[in-house]
Image (tube, rainbow, N blue to C red):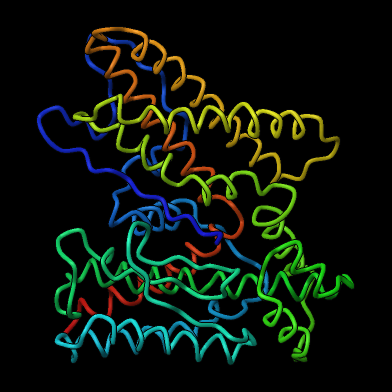
Length: 380
C-alpha cells in the first residue's frame, strides 16, 4: 500500500484560529514559506483543497507525452459516466455507483495497457480510497465519502462530496498507471520480473502481464525520467517519507488533532513519540546522506529542503511537547504553542508528501477530472 491521503482537522469554535496565529501575548514561530497552501486542509475536502492550491498557483507544466488516465479522451469518458449517473440515478445504491465508475476506469486502464486492475470495498478507519499496489486494487470505503452520515444512495452525497469521490477514485486509479510505467522502465533496464517484485512488492502476475504486452510505442526519455523519479520516492532511494506515512498515518492524524484548540495534549503522547523516533532514526540520517550527495538533481534538492522543513518543525514540536508534558499544570500559552507546533508539523509533512513525483502527478490528473465534473453538474 503506498498512497497516503492527507486530511486536515477543521478549526471551529470561539478559540479557532484558521490562520494559526498564536495568542496575542505569545511569540510565534513563523510558518515556513509556501505551507499556507496546505494549512487549510479538511478531512473530507483534503484532496480537493490540495488539488486547487497545487493547480491554481503551482500546477507544473507537464511536457512529457500523456499516458493512460492522463489522456483527455479517457478522462472525458469517465466524467461522462459519472455525470450521467449523478443526473439520472440519484436513488441508486452507493455501492452500485462505485462499481459503475470503477468499471469505467477499469475499461480505460485496460485499453491503456494496465492489466488485472480491480477494486474492493473495505470498512473501518482510513481514507475513502487507497490504491494498494501489492494487491493491485483500489480499496474503497464508502463510509468515508461524507462525514455527515454513512451514505446509502448516490443522492445522500452533496455535489461537493460526489465531486470529491469522483476525483479520489480517479486519483487512486492513476497510481496503477504509474506503476505500469515503472514496470516498463525497469523491464527496459533488463530487470527480471523477480527483481521487480522484490523491489516493489507489486503482484507477480501483474509484472508478468506487463512483460507479455507489446507496447505500440517505446517510452520516451521524459517518461523514463518520470518513471525513475516515481520509483525513487515510492520504492527506491527516497522512499523514507512515503514508507513512514503508510506505516504510521495514525501518528500524522494524531498531531493534526492535537492542533485543534480543544485538543488534550495527553492524547497525542504516543503520536509525538512515533514522529520523534522516526526523526532521529530515519529522517536525520536521510538528511545527512542527502547533504553529502555530490551532484543532487533539482528534484532531490527540493525534496531535501522540504524534508529539512519537516525536521525543523518536528524539533519545535518536540521542544513544545517537553515543556507541556513536564509540567503538572502547563500554562495556557505553552499548550497553545504546542498546538501551533503540531499544526506546523502536519503542514510541513503534507507539503513534502504532495510534492512527491507520484502524488503531484496524481493530484494534477485528479484536478483535471474534478474540474470537468464540477462544471458539468453545475449546469442544467
